[in-house]
Length: 209
Image (cartoon, rainbow, N blue to C red; front, side, top):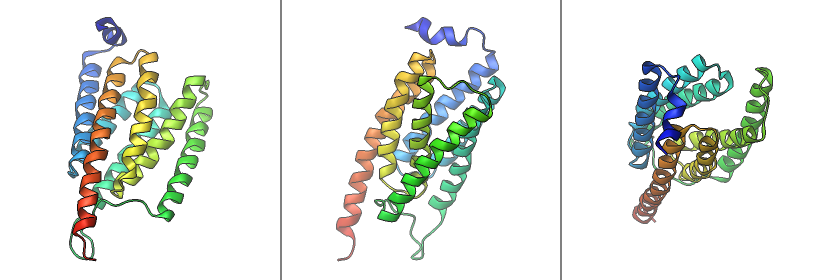
């Protein structure tokens, strides 16, 4: 088991290892803050995605780097939405998606799939069977990131499904640290969904009739 984690880093520099560890820790912290409905989800998430984008760039995975660059942009947007006060000067509340937001989410999911597929083709990647899991999960993560910016509880459902898909994928590819990270993400996402649901139910019960 130890060899499984160490073999992937036998040719990596100390700087790369330290940066990946920093991305690992900040990524875990970001999901933890999201669970607590804490705005620090976004600065910690930005650290994780910016470092990951850099590591993917130096490794030559330009398509994956662009995906993480999108996550960085959405983190800035989400940070703005969570920090902005509403008309009644209260923070953005946890809610469920409306019919319009569900439709927008479906469109974003399918647009993402086509865009990521196009990125693979544009940069000359050979699309293997496991890459289709990447592409499908990217659609889930992109949509989940948008729903999180809007504080929609459904974001956790998408993160849970996507995390479950990529844990065995990264393990299969020998990326032990990433597999472990997304396993932790899955556990935190399940817990976060439960916590957000309690907050949502409390908000509904306390709202004026």
